[in-house]
Image 1: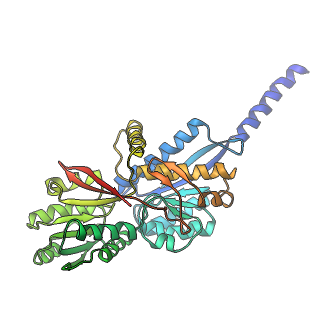
Image 2 (image 1 turned 60 degrees about the vertical axis):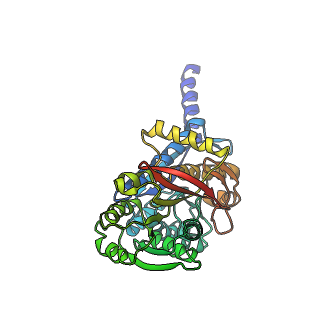
Image 3 (image 1 turned 90 degrees about the vertical axis):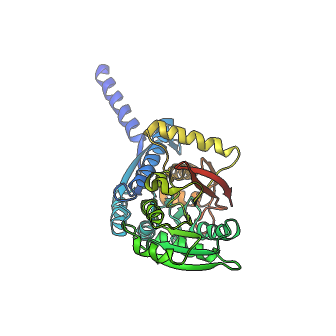
Length: 376
């Protein structure tokens, strides 16, 4: 009789342990196909790295071990695909979403997450519209376009002493947004906006707009868009003999820009800004992260990976503080989080924007991205 009960008791114990290890799904969305796939893969790799680390350490919520599962989707930087995969994540019953990368996909997707009551932390969305919607569960861990574009505009005039400025955007939500904010900041005595042109995120020939700009002899060209367009545009600027500084936001501020532009990237010719930035003691944490990331993935950080990693960790910390993985219960903790991440201190204002967001200015030397300074 006893020998028959022992296997039954062991089976019941295993069953209890299995049920105790709750599986919690966290969604991630980024463009892992299309022209921005290098950035999307960078983001997905970082999300996976964060999830793996949390699971390896033993992630516990309210005394119960939780296994986090990443549900990764591809939006291809396309708004329609972005909303489709957002609904897919809602149907999969994820407890939170990290993403999207592009403002053009993140903004429409955010309504779907909001309607489902699922918190969303974006590591890269900079459009002011994202948090202006006042969705209670929409957050970002980077500075917005008003800070990014406005600061670059002021820097172009006050520091670079630009007088004749041409502006190009790629007609995306991000590109237009950062260009608009740049124009607001690029004001001063004798400053002229000598041209406003636009292209598309998939265009490859910019000869017409660049020829028009060349005739106006700009000393600085600002581009609102991504590196996949910015790199080839620099090549065509060089071919046309346009000798002007080239400036842009975080979309062009990648290691890939040097490869895409070749020798047209010049020496100190390109000035760009990445949302975020660390100084002093925080630089070691960032360097350690970059080293771990390369060891795990075999590739260098492209751009947003540290912010993706921190976004996952912030969401996990809020769950632990709330003693719950349920969105309605951990959302209040997310709103008041104060977390020290690899990208610096993370806390949100009432709109879901990061408090006191930093910007890092970069240029390119020897084809490589070179840090200039961190500004707030």
